Length: 229
Ligand code: ADP
Ligand code: ADP
Image 1 (cartoon, rainbow, N blue to C red):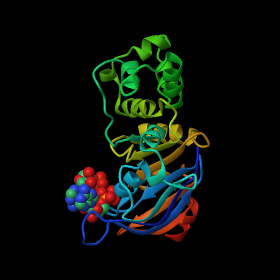
Image 2 (cartoon, rainbow, N blue to C red):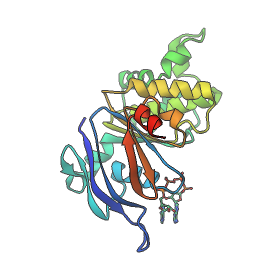
Image 3 (tube, helix red, strand yellow):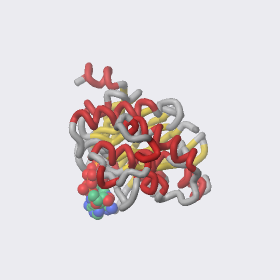
């Protein structure tokens, strides 16, 4: 797991005002970092730059000190993972859902990811045995369980960077709390970047980037940002 750095990053979709400009920050390996800001601020654009789906129109995005432009794309695409706001569920069982994008993964890798995402520990508490639960239909799961299933699927292959775009905005408070706990447990193993609308979602983060109008307007711990506001 390597640190990530943005050096004076600009990204412009069009010749008009850039979506991001003058963005500089570092994210330590294994840090849990939040990104917050109003709609249209540039959060998704930043996520796409971190994932290597887009390249800065100015400045540099680096991993382990190397410009992402000079990093082998297929290597980086296997080192990063993404979880969207709405859990993508395919027809089938919990284990089929976890395996879906990574054909050929062994049972052990599947269980590791399922445990990391608190899929197994949660479902295990039901009276049935745990293999039965990997065999549970995805359609039987609650919203929170589905989102943890999405996280498990994203963790298969042990990426070094996991980016989540508003992973809890469709969930109730209890489900959100369990996702927060799950993401906090990844600290130190995987670099986690969480885009969110509400500050309360990000209380588990080591640091939070505040993006406003395409600029990094603040960077601090949840506590320091609360004191400033
Ligand atoms: P969010 O606020 O969750 O980032 P949006 O509703 O702003 O999502 O955008 C949804 C999709 O539309 C994204 O893929 C984004 O890249 C695209 N999009 C947003 N604004 C524009 C635009 N002005 N022109 C073209 N595509 C856009
Ligand atoms: P956020 O995720 O904070 O809502 P975005 O990164 O989606 O913000 O968007 C930042 C700005 O870039 C917005 O003004 C949006 O309309 C614009 N934008 C996003 N995607 C596109 C796109 N594909 N084409 C053109 N403009 C876009």
